[in-house]
Length: 467
Image 1 (cartoon, rainbow, N blue to C red):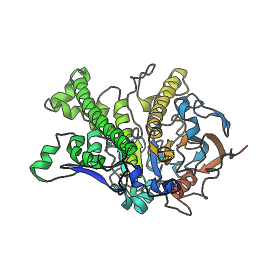
Image 2 (image 1 turned 135 degrees about the vertical axis):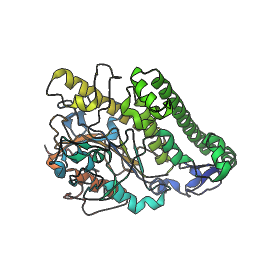
Image 3 (image 1 turned 180 degrees about the vertical axis):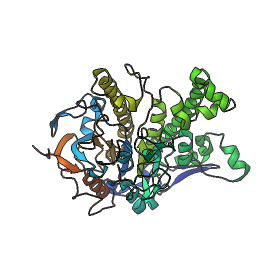
Image 4 (image 1 turned 180 degrees about the horizontal axis):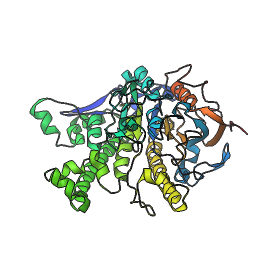
């Protein structure tokens, strides 16, 4: 069957649901092979990890293509050719103030946040992701997507005199306006795939699968597509249904876990036995348990949003600054993330710290697995993206913002030479990397914050940095 050309902006619709579509062959013009770069846009994601990394266990050995992954980076072994590990980058503006909040609040702005104990937040600049969103956000249904797994703390950290709100935000639409991240998988899914239909029909649709809601439209579209596109559409719809089912299953599991958790008894009584309220992700700090599935659901949402060009810009926070998230679900770990990062050089705490870091890289690898499996012409979704994984400090015990742990995955549409470890001059501005990323997003800037230019060697496969 010969495919009928369709618009790149074709969507599947049903009462209460709107699904953007992945890039199909029928959306590409004639001589598509020569136009693949234009058909598949570059996407950008930032994955932020709080509390730094275990010293001595992060940096790879060697430089250029001949490098060995460190113990923490070992989960990325299958993606060694897809990553660029960068050393000696730093955020000079965060080398002041406190241990955590300045490093988190200013991670994507390259500025020093203003000390305040109230809600009058001031980051000093728009974050680099939102600078891009302001310029190209109109080209997608959502200008950007901000996700996380922990709700903001609203008190004041009396140890340093900062409001804890700073620790929950890395994206700033204005110097005084942080963007709230969505932490509930169901709410994030609904934002991507459900429409706000008024009236009874819209209310009834909330209890039905979005795939069922758009099924008739999907069948109509299938008749216009060639064999390969029909298979791609089936794979996409199955991926959406799988995520939707996993969200429902995880919510049920959380409720059952809470009911059997003796530590939850007091909180449940205070909520009037509204177990679902206690199981909500916003209350996650009040309970123990493995939150890996929660994280992966949010990463899946990012992948789906990129796959369908619902947005090209997204951020994800694994946790807030000073996160006390309990990692006892990991073998050999017995405490919280922040507590463990203050290792005091003790071998037993350093080993636990390393395992927590390694878990974070396992989730990063999970996202790359998903994106590399999605084809876009001659490339993959990962090839057409830039995924920045990093933290605002190196050693969590020393709160050191120098030599930040930074990994860039994906080839930025063919403009980044991956499969390398690069050692830059000490104290090279992290913002130089941001300039390079913004340029590749089609939102070029001559400089950003304290940058001195675009980070050298991003597209040079032979560049090793300082020797």
